[in-house]
Amino acid sequence: MDFQVVVLAGGSSKNLTPLVSKELPKPLLPVANRPVLSYVLHQLEQNNLKDLIVVVEGEDTALVVGAWISGTFIDRLHVEIAAVPEDIGTAGAIRAISHHLTAKDILVVSGDLVSDVPPGAVAATHRRHDAAVTAMLSSIPVSGPLDSGSSGGKDKAKKLGRYNIIGLDPGKQFLLHIATGAEIEKDARLPKRILRAVGQMEIRSDLMDAHMYAFKRSVLQEVLDLKDTFQSLKEDVLPYLVRSQLKSEALSNRTPQGEENGNEKVTSQNNQVFVSRILANSSTPSFHDHSSENPDGSASTRKTHKCCVYIASSGSYCVRLNSIQAFMDINRDVTGEADHLLTGTSSDPNNNIGPSPKLGTKTTVGPHCMLGEGSEIGDKCQVKRSVIGRHCRIGSHVKVVNSVVMNHVTIGDGCIIQGSVVCSNVQLQERVVLKDCQVGAGFVVTAGSEYKAESLARKEK
Image (tube, rainbow, N blue to C red; front, side, top):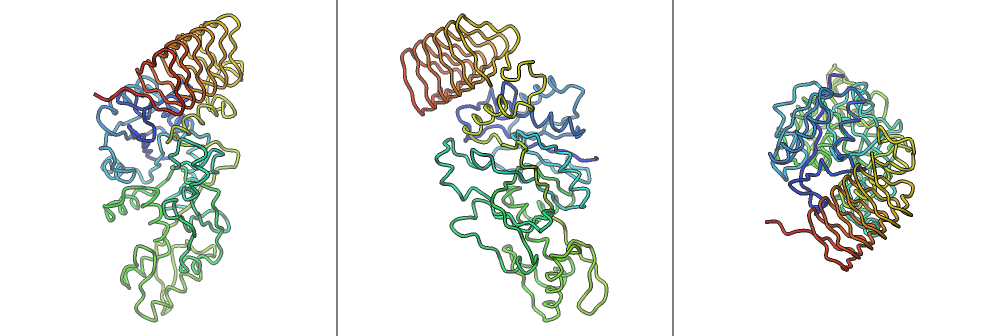
């Protein structure tokens, strides 16, 4: 489709401490024993979008992620790895690699998106409307909005400000208003200018920005050049394009530029008539036509750009891995109701057990579990709704429930692990009890220890 794809994969993430590290950057964080980045890359490959720039934070991350991509997708994708500094934001990352962007249209995808929504559908919608930007919207997952950094479900219920207020045209094709969670406190306020402009608007709070955007490259680069302080595609670039789509090129040439909040500055009666004509027509099908009349009746071209949406079907799966709670949720979902996201699964739909596992006598591995290659579990153990990584050694009389255990973990006899994440190369000695904990890579938990809602990790040298 002649789209250039940019995958914003990141690297470190404060919301995911202690799960991520220099050795295990965020793009390689395992979801059902596969790096989270593999889900996005597989979706792009399936949609024949194979010309990719994968953007990561830092040169070290670029080397690790680049090596993994080369080994996994060899001869399947054309991937360029670009390293950018940390903490420059999504817009800053695009700005930093803008010299690599050459195609007419750019598809920007978050590397932590686990979804079954075809990126090609977003690209096709963008092309069909000849839009400046097309944003993918999806239903809010049961566990909470994508942008909640909370690791606890109870906190999410209180953070209604994390949700978006989204205004759509009656046909649900155009994005007419968006207010991000940071802007929403007690009341949601819409400028009268917008309401006058669109005539009819459907206000939604049950949709979220899924961090997949198609941009017209020339428009995106113009905004990034013009607004050099913009850091976020979602919070800066997208709202700016939505606000400015109600301004015409002819109007901006004839009057002082409007303020950032979208209030027009109009100095003459003729210009007021001109504005009112644009606004009066904006809720009609011709709103996004590229021509109109001047106040004196003469023809004038106006390039009111289009901000469009692709709304994923309600049955779609679409979650971002941007918190520990989301990490737990996605691992649970992908080995459960969303197991269609796994390719090459075993013949038993309820269990994904790798080659040559060794299970002791009277050991049970329940439905919706995954057991990685080369792992061994002793006698009289129970594994329920959990993911066990590769080459783990688990003793006898161990219970693992609603948890994720990564690779090369040793678990001693009599341990109980519930609602926890145990990272690679961890050693849990005998009779350790963990409930709602995260244990960082390489940590040793001494025998008989009990922890609840703790984050355990080695101190950085």
